[in-house]
Image 1 (cartoon, one colour):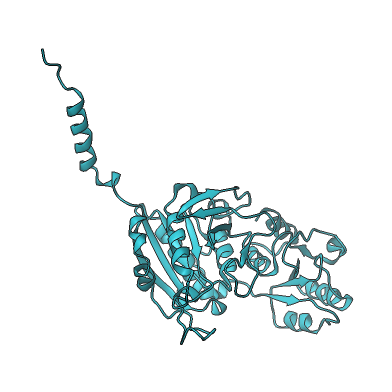
Image 2 (cartoon, one colour; image 1 turned 180 degrees about the vertical axis):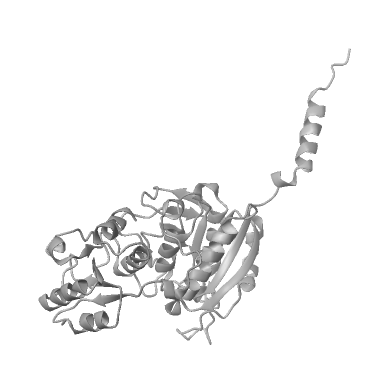
Length: 356
């Protein structure tokens, strides 16, 4: 007697069910938002160290890496096409608004932002404070222009798309990816002018590594960001962002620059102080005068890593200063700017620097 084949019908039914549900086979939908930078740059010649940022469009970048089609269903938008040294609040607001719009759509599973490396850490940190989604958001760039020998843009873009399509990237806030290394937005810093390993996370360490598109995460981001952030720029214009400036400390620095800024109506000043966020007596006196005029003052450090804690070397309680904690001057500026859209109170502003 012949034994009935019960497996074949089950296989046929399963296969038919999968064919009836195309989503089961679909690649994740990822948006690439381009802002320009070296990754889209072109040289006049290989012997020329200079190049023109933003020479190629987002479509050019995607076409240059045909392997991307195996990772995700991609579409691109050109938000800007500039060198990141000229990044500005107008582009930030446009980029943040578009990120929030796209990540709020069910059919978008992640975003990759192409960006120049000069100010990438600032854009990433800004987005970490104002984007309201836990979906992957990855920033990529390059240290060599697209026309250079051994350009690093294609592999960085490949890794960025792979990471944005990776469910493990969800809930970590914006990530910066270059040189096979994953950084959290808050921790990332550009620390060399030209080398491809320019980005480091000197305080809390890197988030992880990429290996041929596969992510290996080492840590979680424990500070507040994205869905846990209380900051928003919905409906903002550039006029809604308070003016905050950075003053770089050095030997024999006087207080004239600080007095001038205070007279111009700035709302905040970040001191890129020496060592532990300190400066000359003249500067500290000028900052105290600025506080009495209603200017918020944050002490940070020019050294690039470490903690600037309250009342260490400088009596913050007496002078009315804020301590920048782990944030470098450029990121302290961003947090102070957004903090001032909420409150001028020193106690609450200081709490932001403890939490974000």
